[in-house]
Length: 374
Image (cartoon, helix red, strand yellow):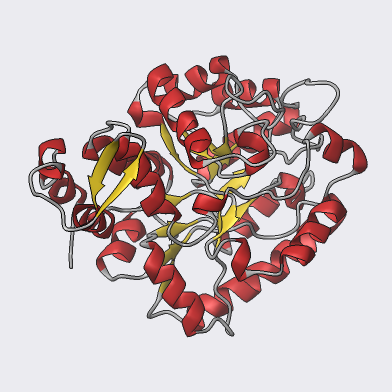
């Protein structure tokens, strides 16, 4: 069914949510939400997860596509290449080749997002849009011409740093927080020029603020949470969130247990608190979803292998600083139904359908409109 953003918003009001007596209801706290209307809301919404590990390859089968369809996702932004500096360039080329082969093989089901209009095209044609993203800029090295190479191969979002320092700036776990280097300034400006989304989800305090200031376009915190609710080096302060909002950017809320609370196992309510906090701090136009998970959740993958991979990627110092612990997931959203669960929770907390639709994808879509212009 072809839906424009205007039609979606026009057809949805908070009053409509309570209009009919539901046959089936789900409760969060003291409020209830009509499930059938919730399904309709998700079906009509553009849902963007700005860090979602769905990477179709030539061997992707019916089960994976069924799960993706169940989720209602429109755009997934998967990580391409290793965040380990020594591996990042070659692994990025290899995985981009694999991704493009998979997209070509399953072109009836997935669509590479090259430009803004591809987002609505994916929705209208019931295909999953893939927005390839780097979680570290180390694949660029110190050669800005590599940006042209990777742009030509489909990369549309680059996180300036991972946890550690690179040629661009300091990551969130560095002992010092020096901010963007001269090369980092040049990189941000060229990303603006090409039409690549600037992401500072893992970047350090001053690098984050510098990127917001230097960028001529809105930037994103693709997947992070609020420092005020969970004092963790990966999370963002009120100052950073306000600066992001002032430039029109969007913060994707991560579903990662470590960043949501200091409890051994964070809950759905802990997660929803972060959405509420950003809305109360800067309004509903600057928050979205960056789950930082496989679309299937951890049950769909080899958990032991992923845990070993995390231990390989993170140094001992990083693991201590990041408070690494098992499980990394929040049970309530560790599955393909996470967008429905989050939407239901936000509605149950009194947020209007219009606000929920923004969080599900329209806020990121607005930012992408300014950047993905080619």
